[in-house]
Image (tube, rainbow, N blue to C red; front, side, top):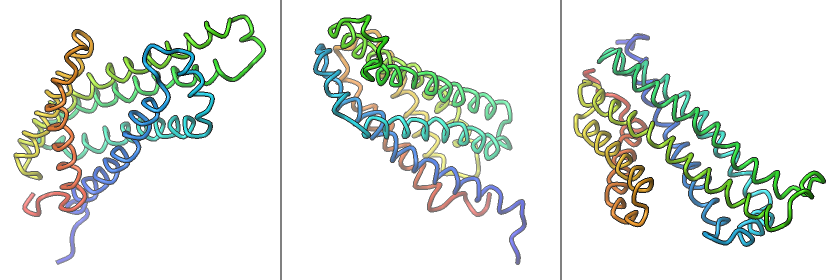
Length: 232
């Protein structure tokens, strides 16, 4: 029997979401973790500025990765809304808005990295600053970017709470995936508030982040391999 368009649609959206999730898993660690870690020297503004000037195209490639990430997030917001609105249109809409808010914060936060590039560009108007002042501003932009990432993560964490609830209630996915996504949201929330309020205890958040990463990876693999349950 030929598969109807209505039957193909959930599978199509699920597979597309899986592919986009894969993009996030590839670009995210490089642009959000590796690049800042390779440039920023905590407490040493001069070393940080020198690392940025020596990074060349790698830092710019990280910016391209950031653009790919928040663009992908916008598309995924729409896909998950379309895929899960039969479960609860209101919850799916709330989940979509929180993910869109995360994408908006990510886009605005990119200005911090662009400002860092401008500070080491050697433009004539920058001679108004002493080298030490310029280096301090470079480190400040990276610190601002780090907190911008945390703000975006707060919205993403709330999104996961709603997404996990929808997945749990949906007949398209195993309930365990929904539970895992809710746990991931809780893990991200704990990390955000810990880094804001008690950064010295950051290591205590690592188990929760490990659970979050495994939950999202399991969801991505289900979307890529299985898509949706046939009976759904």
